[in-house]
Amino acid sequence: QAAEVDTRIRVAKAALGKRAVILGHHYQREEVYRHADFHGDSLQLSRAAAELDAEYIVFCGVHFMAEVADILSRPEQKSILPDLQAGCAMADMASIEQVERAWEELGTVLDPEAEITPVTYVNSSAEIKAFCGRHGGTVCTSSNARKILDWGFHQRPKAFFFPDQHLGRWSGHQLGIPLREMPVWDPALPLGGLSPEEIRQAKILLWKGHCSVHQMFQPIHIERWRAAHPQGKVIAHPEAAFEVCSMADAVGSTDFILKTVKAAESGSEWLVGTEINLVTRLAEEVRPEGKTVEFMSPMVCMCSTMFRIDPEQLALTLEELVAGRERNVIRVAEQTAVEARVALQRMLEQS
Ligand code: 13P
Ligand code: SF4
Image (cartoon, rainbow, N blue to C red):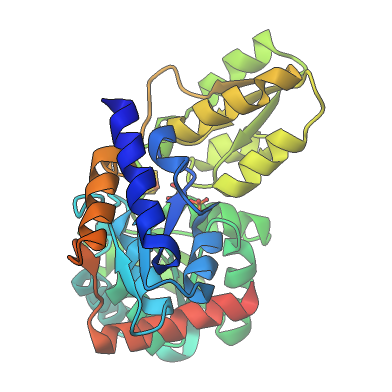
């Protein structure tokens, strides 16, 4: 059965030739990942989407990634998500209504247009990217967040970071900002649950969002592992909690994690804090060199929405294209796309 689906994907892909390109995020399961023409972290895949010529960009990733591909590609190109249920729970933690309301509320304390650069993690809806485009802000990914925030501070003295508080906090910390100047804005509370004084003193307002996959990693996991592997190295994704990132030997995007471990000396031992499909694949890849890679949590933390893209869905998507039918095309509304493109282009210029 698995071999049969694999063959169907290969046959359909060959029939489409250069008309379709498959992009695969590093969290994709192996049976899907192996069919991708390009692999990467979010920034690399955004760049690929902006530069490719194919008629169809088949995005094996999650919804916001396919939206970015649509926004950055040419109008005649189409971005396709093999399973429309493949969303990102973190991206859903900030709605455009909440963000607009927060901006308005901030206006009762200071002048946000003059004092705050809105920066959204790429894991957000196209509407929030458009909001950032409209208000002089931009987008960042896990690999350029620090640099982009720094850019933001050259525009205006404060930043509002959506929706991942952990990436925002870690990046702010890297820029030397004390934790007390990075309060969390809770959209469920009036004025985000902050006092006007806290807002005036803040350098970065952190939206109350997180990734439930990366939240599973705890300092105790690192402590226990280090006790058993005194020579071992710990590497984590910046969506992990601040305490975890602070204890790690290295912190970075999915691509950074892969490159760092692959480039390490043979025989080295690694504890990795990011999604399990990536970690399992990496462990297998480096085993022949005598390197060991272990997953940070005793629980299986998998991104269940990334996992929704299965070989069957990919086969079906490609076969439909061969038959002249387009399935699961992601189209961002024109005005939203124009404004989101402004924000994304600001990011691409900086990185
Ligand atoms: P990367 O940009 O590091 O690939 O991260 C994307 C993501 O969703 C991590 O959870
Ligand atoms: Fe979203 Fe977390 Fe999955 Fe990344 S791992 S796509 S942030 S839910």
